[in-house]
Image (cartoon, rainbow, N blue to C red; front, top):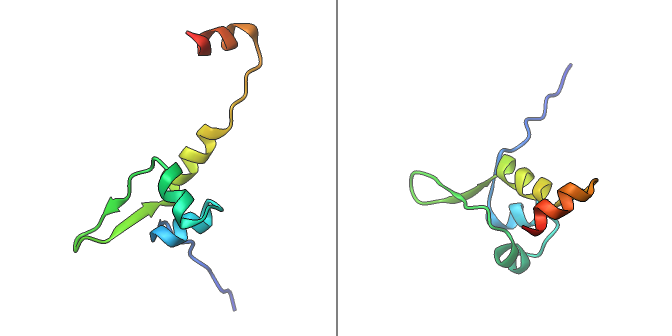
Length: 72
């Protein structure tokens, strides 16, 4: 017997905060990701958008030209 677990794509605010390892208060203050407004008005955060935001927080600079480009 094979058991398949489907990961969730959309999270409530509390779930999104937990996923990002932030308290709900910090998540609300720090996260620029806009929720998806579902029919009926529920606000849900897309895990792909959260992943993109987190990936953008990783700053790697390897050359002097890249450093100068960031300062301009």
